[in-house]
Length: 470
Image (tube, rainbow, N blue to C red):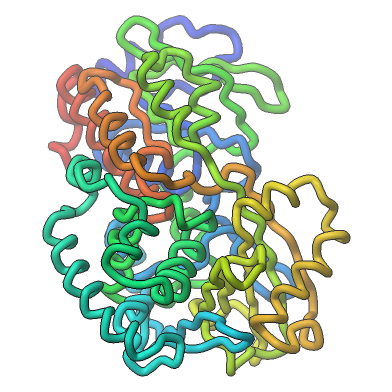
């Protein structure tokens, strides 16, 4: 916006309770919204972020207890998460990451069996593991061949290509190309652990995209608390927490956003808006979605996640950093992670933070149960993976996420491809919700990047470039 335009906008009459004027409103201070806000501000636009919670980061949030840093949601940043790493570099955190050794295991018949090598990509190499029979290990060559073929056909973030290939369940693929043992002890635990929902109904695209990304490299160490990037981005833009948005609508050539806080209701009129919230929330606050957009978003169900966080007196050194639990184990627990190994300075010396994530079916049933009722049950399940956990336990906490991940099914990628293509290129309201990609921190940041780029192009066509498209 030119200086004259800024002056004229601020001089115009404002509705009572409007408060701060801004070029762009971003709804949501998770990593998607903060990414969009940061990118738009770098292009010269004045941005205000409205966040309903009392903190930033969304599922990338952390907090501190008794000298332990606790990740409330996400725990891992693999090498393949290049959008996040580039974003960190652009925000002045270029030296935040370094490679971290990863040990990965899967339980079978009462033992946690490690897979060969570092990184989850070992799940398709596993030549040295006792997890699989030699017959299954030989069949893994087919999986490697198919992985290479799929990686050529699936471009980066190309949901149109993914949609064309989204015609078969992963269970059907395993039966056709591999065998039941590989499905039960490689494919099932990997997808169940990553997405925390039932693997058998997932698309084969889920499997190849997931394995392809993690085969590019294992996890990285990062600064204390996975919220380090969200906190940095929030320090560079204007964020209002405890600000709940109730409606977003077009008004003239701009946008009207209504929101509430402890002081009452407020209105902001802006030139553009990015809506970076989950599907159920966007359906509620943005009534101007087309009927087809609403139908598509409603067709993407969300899974719930129950997370247990355990502060331990010592690191369970004989337990792999990550253990993905197969459906056949009969547990609600989907994956365990020694979080502190990715952020070594996050705990008192010699101690550890371990987390467990429970799958959707278990989590939905547990959402209304009190912590005191749930914790003994969760600790028993954790001890099947980490023997002696209760003896070393200093504290335990529960995090509940009712709408945590978009639940996957055959046809999901076709749905997302259509939803993305439905966006009006001239619209000054852009969507950046997690229903526009694969659930995860990198994909969420990518959604913020796309929304910011599209909105910046439109605003610059209307008002001129502010900084030459930095």
